[in-house]
Image 1 (tube, rainbow, N blue to C red):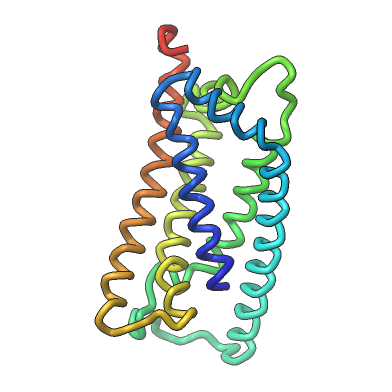
Image 2 (image 1 turned 135 degrees about the horizontal axis):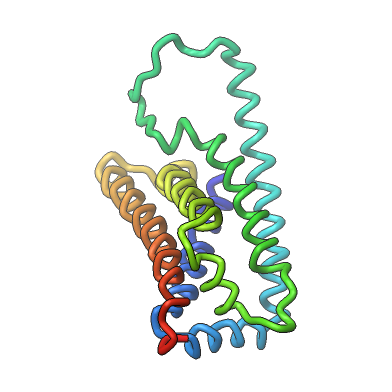
Length: 203
């Protein structure tokens, strides 16, 4: 869980940095996309690696979830935040499941789509052209991801044994900052993309 979780934190960071090229214009964004196509073999290898890690992460997550349920079939009458429990930690199984649905929808919408007569820039800008279903869906999705990684980031270090009373509070704060950057970063792309169709000079 720790290794795969931290790997996904790295992946979404790289994914965010790549998508932020949209702020520099159409040509820059499409140049980034073309670069990915130029290393298609590496991208395909990375995708298989992501699938493998996803299966491990989800499988272990389900195992731990049901193991905990079997250990205590009756929930606590009163939930407390003691013991380092946060919103990110106690909702992790549920946000994880919803993120899986979000990722599948995202792949169908952007990865496995016919691009013979269009490109990624047009798909991105038109998808969020108005404040409709897809905009709300993606806002919900990035919020789920942010909440999930707010727990996964610091707990990954803790699980790997890199926990120390002196440094752990700092790592926890870094985790919160990281989750905010991820959430705000992706959300900003959604709102910026919604403005692109209204700016002919930018298109």
